Image (cartoon, one colour):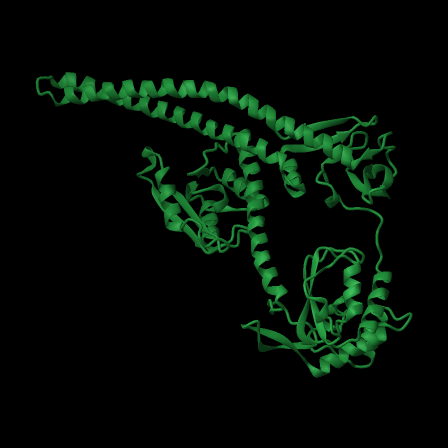
Length: 506
């Protein structure tokens, strides 16, 4: 059996602490009675903590599964993973193989339910820290894209890449591929005809032996081509189209000259009426499709898109946690009418009633906003109560630690006296034997007291974590609330009269 020392340096943060320094920190927390044990270093230099696809980490996990590792030591929790789901799986594997987990910077007893819960909650915020780093990278990406620079990715159908210079920066731009461009024109012209669906268009291409140069035709591929503004000749009509839909138009209106194509950057989960999550940039390449034809196709494809009335659970951070007390079925978020301020009314409904017809559901309307406010306050109270209860323990622990340290000082004095006596030649052999026995007992007492101090100090770190979580909860965003809710709450049961019962994980 060996002790594993694991270090990881992220590709996202060049100025982060080096793997060599991390290993030194790991070595510093090896207990005196463990220093004779073998240590194995597992290092992943230049890997993100967003997944577990790392050579050093995988080698370590294989050793753990073979029963070769007794303890894993890391510099910090987020070195082993920044993903909560991955970390929970790692923790389960360690527990299965009786492997201790130690962080040199955060002391937690993962063998206790409370300590394990705190570690999981900390991992929630480690995961969101990783996402914030990704956001900063996105901002740098956005800046370059707004200049019209090529940002990589798969080439759009109809174009190849050629070298160019934009604003004194060497980059690439799109140049047309003649036969593919002719196919693009054919696709737009035919789809604009009434009663021609994507399926009929695909069949027409195949029947006329018009083969795609990459892959094969599908309705999804045709839909992506038709919706892609890279083909349109950007003019004032295109500027107005995106402006009315609240898109972030990064290029000056004068660049919409009816000659060049455009490209979009940002998220893709926008609606046809609200594109505030994307950026529009006029690119240096020539457009292919006239704006009137392109807009005609957009209007048609938007009209044919089927919009469901239901809203999925991602619209509430309580998604998956609300259940009907009567039938036990999950309650999902459904949208209602719009309020005067334009926001959508959301409420929870029992699937046992709406889908399975086996339950009458609660007799009151459960508005999502009200339920979220209530649970938000309950979690805040829960964290505050943990904070208060742990503060009292903190005071008690400080007193206990002080007494134990005094005992250690007394033992140290006794040990020094015994050493001096053993060095005195006037003592008889049988007397020295008794002194050796006494020295052995003192050593055992010292070890036991040291372990008690470490346990109490570990609990002190848990107290600090609870206090920090209480503060973070006040400013948590929707995704953070959902993640913390998943850790703290098992289920929220809604009774017939609308009252609720919260089943906590802690």
